[in-house]
Length: 585
Image 1 (cartoon, rainbow, N blue to C red):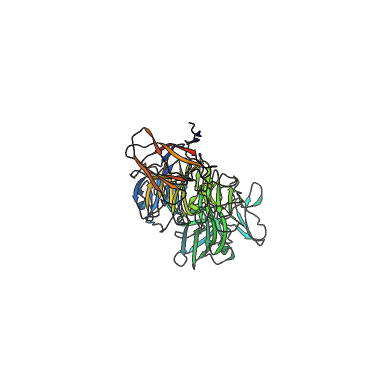
Image 2 (image 1 turned 120 degrees about the vertical axis):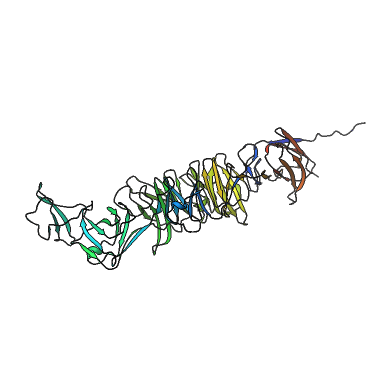
């Protein structure tokens, strides 16, 4: 008797031993995950869980955080340094409510939009960048007199049109022959009159110079009387300053005293949308109404001096400003290398500082920062990452490139970001209103989704990244401080398995090799043929530090998806897929 000859069933095995990151796309690469929660690239190529976080507590009055060797914040209108409130050092100042932008200039913490500065090393050195004194002339007359740059009085020996005769060495002559009068000095050595290069006027009144310093750029207003006095109502760079007097450049035919009106001296701070530090200067931008006029401008303060934004002495250390012709409001600012960068939604303005002070702004038309996501800008490995309308972009100084293909068709907004340990952390809101915290490993090019933690500000101290939530809760993402959370709950969901195979091939077994320490657990779920329901395939508790093999036998189907959920530490080392060829029926 002869039996029919049987054909051996063709089997094949595919082993995945390198697990990628988040790929929420129609076609997910082998080893990547369509969805996940609380996974990390720390153990790449193995699949691992993110570090446990620490919670420092809830601080409802916390308005902003920053870091410079230690955590610095604004809480309930007061600066805090390393957790200690500086309220008693702020001389009675309480900052305004609302979110703040914190920028460092050396040891100075600069708080915007208040325009407040605080020296984090010398706690009593603080104040407002803008400053004003107002003198009521009826109560304290303002005296105006000609003087030298050192403040010494100048009394012209001659005030006339014709050249004087019989002058002595050092005599002054006020030459009134032209429409603009000039001051000249006689030199006996050369027997010539020469123009005094810098002619100054001293304004004296009680308190008129209080809070000002030489070199401050100030606007004087309220002077009246002669045309020469009224001409002093302008922008000046102070030559000298003391409590009872200031010295500015100008000219007077005769000393005068004003007894009516109010004379004001103002050091102004421009309204700015975003501010960044670069090259020992603060750089800012403004679009919209400012000082009663519409502006679209860029600014920088005087070199090393956050208080002066209108100090123009003709030196390389001067303040600077420039008008821009690009359309739309500014959406963010940052520093890349040694250049400040300003963003709009559809372009980037990069400023190239010059040693001479002739700074140049270059415009690049490209994907800029999405409006409302200025806090998404963060520097990682010498590059800037940020959320644009097209997704997350990376900018290295040439042209921004998208790095968010893993998000597929998902769109996000209202993002905030920080960086630590070569990774970019970004918290943003999806179109469906769900919150997401994603992590991009710049070196490996991998995205991972942690969870739905909402973060409005990040600050890095050393290798620790602090995260401030909108409700005022402050956390450490690597758990070096604060109360440690419990075992992390995690999830990993694959893309469609075998949907792209040619012919009738079916998955007959899935082998998972993993390390699951004692106290940890894992559950396995399968969805068949995109049916929407998940079938529980088993549960396993941790077995210690040895790896183990977990076999899974799925039902026969066209395609399936695998979901792993668990609690605690896990290291998934490999996923083997065994397929068999079936009949065509």
